[in-house]
Length: 139
Image (cartoon, rainbow, N blue to C red; front, side):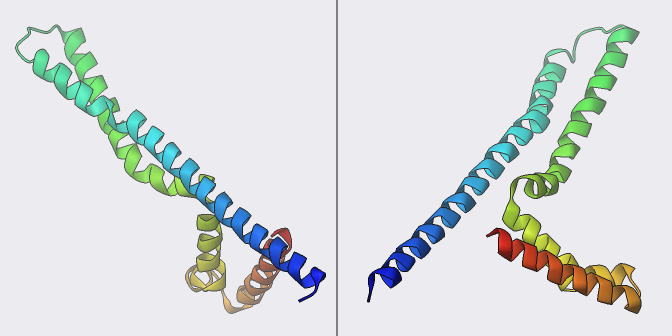
C-alpha cells in the first residue's frame, strides 16, 4: 500500500465519519424542534383542564363563558396542530427525509401514476435523473 492509497482511505473514513455526524446532528435538531412544538401545542390543554376544574363551581358572567369557549377552541386547535406538524418538522429539518420523499414521489412513479399522463412521465424521469446527479455532485 503506497502513501496515496493510504491517504485516500483516511480521507474516505473521515468523509464517512463527517456524514454520520451530520446525520446525527440533523436528527438531534429534528427531535429538539419536535419537542418544542409538542410543548407549545400540547401543554396548554392540561393547563386549561386544571383551570376548568378550579372554576367549575364559580358563577360566571356571559363574558367569562365566551372567554372559556374561545380558550377551549384555541386549546383544542393547538392540540390538533401537533398531529399535523410532525410531517412539516421532518421536511424542514431532515435532509434524509426530504431525499427519501423525493425518491418516493419522483423515482418510484407514485407522483406519475396519480397525476401525470404518459408524455409527462418522460419529463419527470429526466427531472429525477438531473436531481440525482445534482445530489451526487453536492456530496
